[in-house]
Length: 333
Image (cartoon, one colour):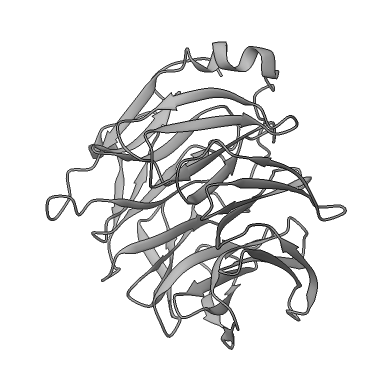
């Protein structure tokens, strides 16, 4: 994948005035099978930011060009027989996508040829995906608190496919996971229903640290692009920010309404936003101070959020029409 250059960072005192000039774009998907069924469950930008994938409860998996909002410029990928629970792009290949579903499969896609290159049965309803930074392995989370590593073999898109390793049952409720940015992967971070985050050695799964992050279940987590901070979102409506050098909590953000279902750092790690299935707004916070600096008013709750990997565009779900991206309809950030 060719090197990609991000935009310049915007300082905190100028962010809100500049961000408020960006125009939102709505991406309406007409393929909803029944009224209310086209609820977006997941969204993700590819590494270059030229494509964004969305998955919904009605089995629709679609790849959008953010600069062309019409559905005729998108690609629908069909194969799953259950709702799409999570999508994730190979960090090293801009055209390789993984998707998992309640149908018990993980599918790998070449979005250029619109083909499914590999299907892996994971033995239960899959609802989380985490791709290692080098693209060598995908960790799938099942709803029965079992983790299934899937080796990506043959060099990615067009290669020999993917193969599941032995399943790894967990002793506690296990929600979202993520790998550290290390290449090859060395640490795995796992949220639990007990309010903690486990930092595990990979691939031995031996415990390295336990972060007592929240007073109730942890649902989401995200490493900032530079790896300095880990953000953790809980059912207590809090976001905690952890220093990854000493694994200590630096600050808590309390501006959310309802459980924090997703988290996203801006490309420069300066700003963070959380998604919730309650409330009508998105609150953008400055990471180093914990100060909330801008509010995006939404027509309904927005549980899933994702910053563009190279610029200050923000994608979110929850709009009754479908995906929305702040910045895609005009602006200079």
